[in-house]
Amino acid sequence: MSQHAPESVAPTRIDPVAASASEVIGGPLGRYAAMARRTEGSSWLPAAAVLAGLSSLTVALGVLQKAHCFNTGWNNPDQFWHACYSDLPVSSGIGQAMPYLPGAPHLDQPLISGVVMWLVGLVVPKGSVLAQQQWYFAMWAVLVTVVVMALVVVTAASVPRAPWRAAHVAFSPVLVLAGLVSVDLFGVLLASVALWAWGRNKIILAGLVLGLSISARTYPLVLLVAIGLLALRSGKVGAWARLAGTALITWLAVSLPWLVINADGLLSVYRSWWRSGPSYGSLWMVPGLLGHGLQGRVTVLVIGGWAVALVVGALFALSLDRRPTVAEVSLVMLVVVVVTGKAVPVQAGLWLLPLIALVGLKWRDHLIWAGSEAIYFVAVWLYIAGVSQPDRGLPPGGYSLLTVMRAAAWLYVLVQVWRVAGSRGPMTLSEPVGQEPVGPGAVEEVDPLAGPMAGVSDDLLVRIS
Image (cartoon, rainbow, N blue to C red; front, side, top):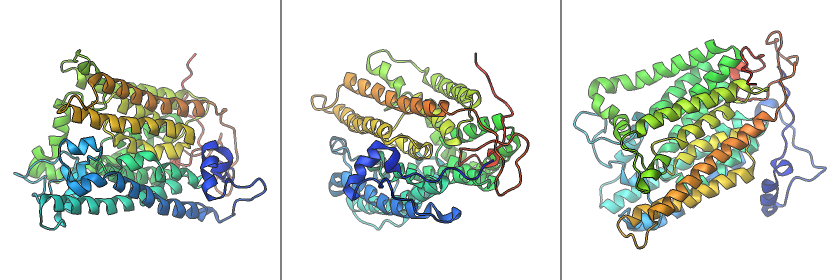
C-alpha cells in the first residue's frame, strides 16, 4: 500500500464554490503559491484549528435563529410560527428524577443522550419556567459549541491529506438550523470518533466508541454494517468481527444495569418507535396527508427500507471496480435508511454532515441539499402551526410536495457520491513505502478510513453483467 497519497490540494483550486467564497478573505490560492509543508503527523492541525474556531460562529448563528423563543419562551404555536422550536428546553425534563429509574417520567431519548440531557438539567438554577428554559438552552449552546469544534477536529484528523473538507461541518447551513434542535450532535461526534479510530487501526477503541454512539443514537448501526460489507470484500471479516463484538459488549455493559433496574424506562423509546405511525418528514406520511393512509403497515415498510439499504450497500461496496471508501458506503446506506424511515426530523441532516465532509462532496451539491433542508425546515413548522390555524399554515398538499422534494435532495447526494466512486479506475498494484508489505497483490489505497483494509487486495468482488 502506498502511504504517500497526493499532496494536499487547496479547496479553492478544485471547487468553484469554495473559490468564489474565498473572495471575502482575499481570493483563491494563487497559481504559483505553494502549500506549506509540515510533518506527516501534524499537516492537518492548522486547518483543523482554523475551522474549529470559525465553527463557533456557525453555532452562534444558530443561537440567533432561536432568539425569539429564547426571549419569549417555547410556547405553542408561537415557537412554530417563528421556526425556533427546540427539543432541548421543551423535552428535557428539567428538574425531574433520573429518567431511567423506576417511577421516573420517561424521556424519549436513547440511554446516553437521555443521561446527558438529565445531567445538564441538574445544574439549572431554580426559577420560573422561562428562566429555567433559558438557562438550559444557554448551557446547551455552550456544550454544542464544544461538540461541534471537536467534531470538526475529528473530521479533519480523519482525512489528514484533505483537512479542509471539515469545512462542510463547520460552515454548513444545516448546522445553523438544526444544531440546537436536539441532542443528536453528541451521538454524531461519538460516531465520527469511531470512524477515526477504525481508520487508525484502533479496532478495540473504535468498537468501544461505536457501542457508546449506538447507545446515544441508533443510526451508527448503519456505519457498522457499511464497514462489514467492505471487510467482506477485502477479506478482513475477522477485524470487523472484533469491531462488532466490542461494540456489542460496550452496548450491553452500558445498557444491562438499566435493563435490570428498569427495563421499561430504557426500552420505552424503542417501543414507542415500534408502535408509532409515520411522522414528520417521512415519505410514508404523504399518503395519509393525501387521504390514503397505510393503515399500520409502516413498520414493515421501514424494516423493508433497512433491507433495501443492505442490498444497495452491498451492490455499491462489492461490485465497483475500485473499492469505495468507508464514508461513501456509509453515506449511501444512511441515505436509504433515512429516506425510508418512519420519521425524518430536521436534525437528521446532522447525521449526514461528517460523511459529506469525509467523501469530499462538492460544495455545489452540499448547498443544493442544504437548500432543500432549509426549505423543509420552514415548511414543517408552518405545517405544524397550521394545524391550529389552517388559514395561516402550510396545507397538507404543499407540505407533502416539500417532503418529497427533500427526499429527492437526499437521493441526489447519494447519486453524486455513487457517480464519483464509480468513476475511479481499477486498483493498481503498489509497493508499500516505509513499512512492511501488506502481502501479495497490495494495492494503492485511497480511503483514509480503511484501517485494517488499507492496501489489501479484494477477496470478494461481485460482477454484475
